[in-house]
Image 1 (cartoon, rainbow, N blue to C red):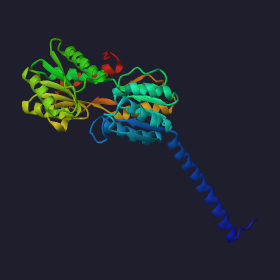
Image 2 (image 1 turned 180 degrees about the horizontal axis):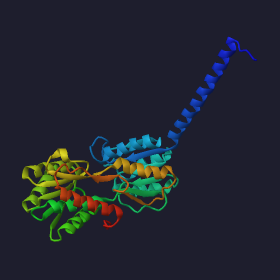
Image 3 (image 1 turned 90 degrees about the vertical axis):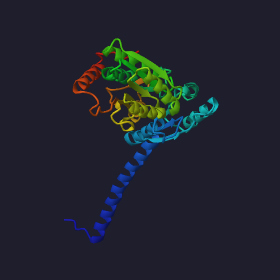
Image 4 (image 1 turned 90 degrees about the horizontal axis):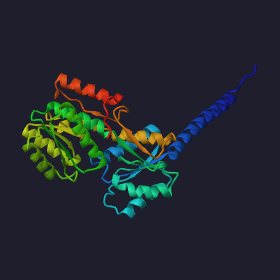
Length: 332
């Protein structure tokens, strides 16, 4: 039987330790290579602490980093860049080898179209309803009609005056989809209800927002769907003073006016971006329009917190289920 000296035992232990460390080192190196092998960038009109789309997009990058073991980068505050400057911003990331480059605004589509042609192996997306080029440039958006329809249902159920209003900031494709389906959902409950659609022209003018809301309240609207980002807070507060109801958008707005805000259409931008990045990571990005909604769990209604009766809540939940199964058509 072979007897090992103390020195031999130490040598064997040292060799085993090196093997274990080496294996661990190889694994660590593979992880670092994985990080560098998938790179995602985003171009934002605003800042990452704006409590709105900029911040939620930045949170999306963080989620992608965590879930897909990716490297991310962003450029914020480009709202005032010229078209040439914007193209150069996108080009910079493409030249650096980023695999997936996101443009947060629909205003970036011309720049994205130009750069996508120059970098056919890079995948691009705009966060807006857009058909894409069926190759490498596509879009990520929510099924806005789902929450628009549900919001209209709730507004019609709660209105005592049979007059409700949609107040939007910028008249984008997504916002118009919400407004149209808001009216459709309301009239499915009350065919004769009066639905007013108003646009502010901006998302950051509280004074104008309050003035528009005041006019709607004076003409009888007692439930307001507010899709106006920063300017929306002023409307919720005015509604509380006037003792009417509102419905928020993107985030849960209940704390802005407790008891006044019936619910909010919550849209989880980080989850939306993860859906898109996952398609790219899996090699399934086709450069088309991708829409996600209730079924994928990227959007939902905020809790009602007792603002609806049990019967009203049951009605809303039933309609929500029928939207998910396709029994109710919320497409344009």
